[in-house]
Length: 459
Image (cartoon, rainbow, N blue to C red; front, side, top):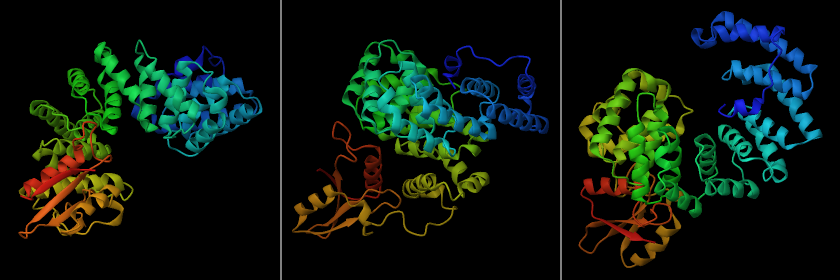
């Protein structure tokens, strides 16, 4: 939606039309119950019916004007209208018959508004796959940013070489940051899992020129995960991002942006001040009391886990997560497998490091720690097999000691009968400076808390 005014290019509905009057009435009352009161729902149905009739008998340019008017008035609800899908079909058909750069960008924008809702992602992926070679190198930077934003919203990954090369070049060619355009490229970099040394070099350069420091919290927390995902250990760059985020943090900061900051810090073992973590904890607990996280349970779980990984153990967050009834109801949703796995990992950590905090919760079916628990095959990395060869003269086994922490290790029975836990540092868990990443560091901390003898080896 940030690029919507740019795309409109001055086209508006005739103010005398019936549709325009309906839209004006809808807009005037949209603030009432978020536009979902019965009167407005009835207006929405009339608008949908009127637009469907108009779209059937309109040229592509007229259809775009209708869609732009609808998007301006009901951005969150527009893709639920039947007329929107009908319009997309006509615009798509027209594009195939006579493709152009402008149509390519506009159609991508419209499809991106579906986000992950059918049929948007499939249609957008097909469009990008088929026409990237024809148009990606020709369109302007802002048009390319629109394409990147659309694919990001729809979670469409792009393997096209021209697209990926253009994306990297747009970032490294940046001189003056237009935050909306630049962050569109950054989001796309992360979504497409691009690990490029030249991008990191560019981020360092922008930091040295004091340009990152001029960005707001929301922008910076899209940049930080690029560093975290690629396990880059650069304390100076990370400090600039974290300090600037904390300076611009306020009550308007979204919970998912708090989550991104803490996730990034935890993955690269950033040494955040305890006082800063305390302030964030207080803010999160206040938001919990205001029921903000009842609809954002995934963010809450990630925040609590990230803080624990940073060795900040929040009793308040744990109490809310495991003993607040509404959270239990929400977390029981069977579709939230990924979040449930993170919650289980956090529970394991609490059972090991602060067992009295959770003793009244549901008892675990398996012990949190079992040094003889055999590792499942899918956790056995090639590097573990390689290191295992160095202990041929010893009694060894590949184990999964910490429940829900999916990092296998090697258990070595030493000559004196004691156990040695060997953890393997490789490309999956090593930072750029060859130190353990956040998850492996967590495992090492838990093992040491349990008085285990631990030895880390490099692949």
